[in-house]
Image 1 (tube, rainbow, N blue to C red):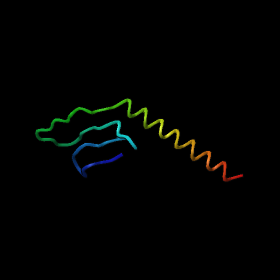
Image 2: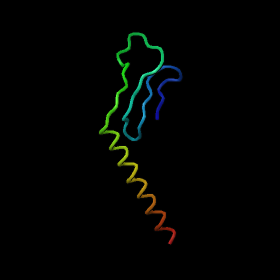
Image 3: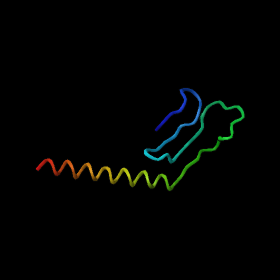
Image 4: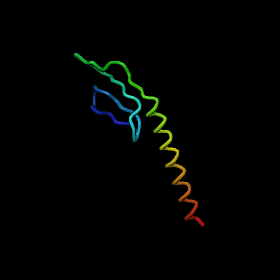
Length: 65
């Protein structure tokens, strides 16, 4: 998660790829008022998290022997 401004602004969710962006707060002449979601980026994030988790689990089990 990354909050780009301390009070108003857009918040982005997802790592390493942003899959959800929402603008909240006061806005004058803003074009981005609807939340944006990318399902393909969400799937990539979940896949990367799973692979990273399995890799860490494999490394831990390998060194415990």
